[in-house]
Amino acid sequence: MKQQKAAILAGMLTLSVGAPALAQSAYPVDTVTMVVPYAAGGAGDTVGRLVADELGRRLGVNFVVENVGGASGAIGAEQVARSPADGSTLLLAGNAIFTTAPHLADVGFEPFQDFTAIANVSEAKRLLVSSKSLPVTTIQEFVAYGKEHPGEMNYGSVGVGSTGHVSTVDMLNVMGIEATHIPYKGAAEVVQAVLSGDIQFMMDAAAVPQARQDAVMALAVPGDEPMAEFPDVPALASIGYDSISGTGWQMVMGPGGMPEEVVAMVETALEEAIADPAFADKLGKANVTPRFMASAELDAALRADYDRFEELLTGLGLSQ
Image 1 (tube, rainbow, N blue to C red):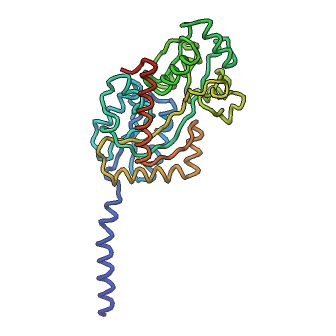
Image 2 (image 1 turned 90 degrees about the vertical axis):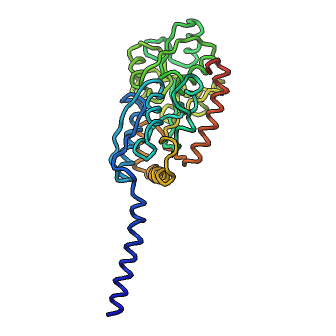
């Protein structure tokens, strides 16, 4: 009898110790708003929805995606920066919001004080494409046409200060081409403008599906490696333009001052998700490459890129 009582008492003690631990491991809110600071339909929106679905499943929490486009993503980012730091609001954003845009305008937030870096999810390699209405079929013909028709071509991006904008300005300067920038709220709008001929070219990962369908002319890949699915489209470095980079990151951020335990929960869920072949395959179909960076690594990478783009933009005469 005494042994039975001892066993029951031991079980009660085990439950009383285990219960708080279980409560501490539960996500602190029931519903999370995932702000995607771009218009619906673009690559950033697609990745944001995939990440929100995956986090919701792994954390056992309801995720709601809210598209808040405009100002190269700064409007949506500022909304998150001003939100409670309790895990109820997260941001799925590209690196340009934190590394490029603050050098160009007053974005309404301080990129490292007002945000908590949680984890990087993926990276996207951009593709330089032109409208079928432009009489070029190769990057060499594009450069020649641009020099022969200074100021006559328009190009688009998701906004002033976006990585696509800055990389394109850098490319045009190196090539000696004058063209006019037309900002849009989202990548889908830029793609449509190229398809309709309203603009003559763009450099963005969102153009990849149209290039697959031969609806636009794929001209080059910024960086030093071509894309596997476009083996005949040269990398810019291979034809002498080795200073132009066009890779963008997609990351999950939170408001500044988020509790470490909440950051760790989201970070761990994302690390496990990216290691899952099924989720990695979904990212691949969204034209991005899975690339996990933990909180500390992501924060360091963003700070390094912030300094690099400050130098680049100052050299281009774009820094405020």
